[in-house]
Length: 82
Image 1 (tube, rainbow, N blue to C red):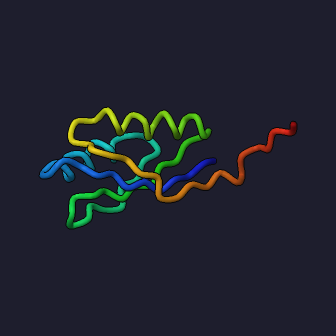
Image 2 (image 1 turned 90 degrees about the horizontal axis):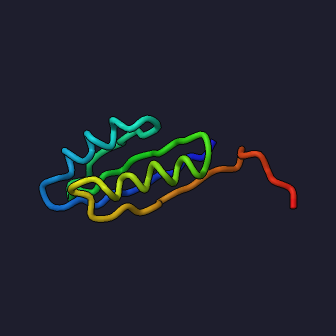
């Protein structure tokens, strides 16, 4: 199961509202809102594609300026042989 840590930069004054909306997504855990308005969250999905779709949805939320990947782990995914 892939797990990623993301940092979400918000438009001024929107971070707490965005954090609430992001926390409502299945597979997302918001760990905090930093004093500068950035949100720290962990995203978990069944597949890497599912995780990408979930994080991509953040970009479409009002108040989100940027989403950056801080950490990604998917080592227990089934390996595909060439």
